[in-house]
Image (cartoon, rainbow, N blue to C red; front, side, top):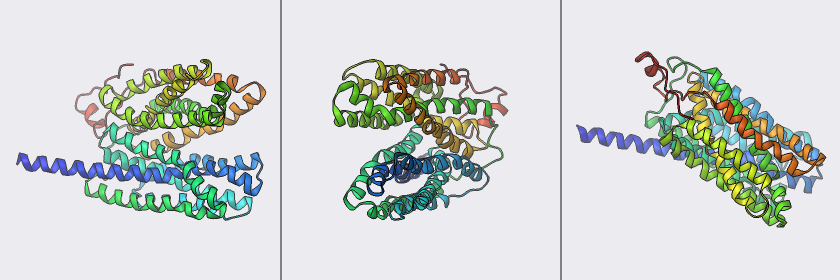
Length: 410
């Protein structure tokens, strides 16, 4: 009997690991389209003579609409199981970007890019819920799922350059290939998850929602988002100024920012499994503040070290934000996923023009100084938060003992 139970556990774990792997790869395919629109901007400017304002309008059409409707899709997935949404949203996200190079009017370009943004928005809440179910409380597994999205975002400029730089905007329909692959992977992940018994239980009996803690967590995510978007937009230019190394120096700094993010995302899940999520998140915000200060204030080649530390500090809590938000709102996991992956993150994009305007009025270094304070503000918002009960134990932790979950140490 013991041997059969062991074999069943091993088989179930294998199925769940397969589901997480497929979801992570699908996440990478979908998030290519989050980075692809910005990567297409130079080609729109070169081939269609778009002004910088017109080009920024294309980016805004994709990112802002996507972020705003993501909580709406989250609310829908809280009410109804919609696994079919994953392959459909992957195809929608890819189709919009694929068409953007072959429609010639500015209005149509905005429309198809906005449709792509809606596809990306529809994907994330249901995908994050499916990953949560497949992970069964494993922070490491959620880290791998989050890493997939980060990798897809980082690969987007390379993919766009490979296709459009060689064939022009007319070759953009080839950019649909990752979407087709993502749809196949998502469909396979759903079949694997069903085979492993990871179907979600929605709504009743999931525990009590803690909106106060969720809103404070969302505020911290906003602070993190502003720092990340501000550095992503300007770190290449800033490092060129500080080191005098030209385009190569700036590109290297951006690569360090993205590669450090990949490492930090995986490390965050492993650290949380050992030390607890809130403890890891709080320390990451402290590290981020110190590292950003180093980027802005310390001269010379050591700036690359501080960029790497900043990247790790920003990305270590990335997947932990998602699982914390889901556990603070166990009855509204889709809504929590939509906010932590979409709405709170979009504020960073809205703040980037403010950083740019301040840089125009003063200097780029002066404009980046306020970013030092934001991780400290995020850390203050995290003070006093309690570690929520793990998935599936919220009711047990209160009903059986009458005690609240223990407070995680800071």
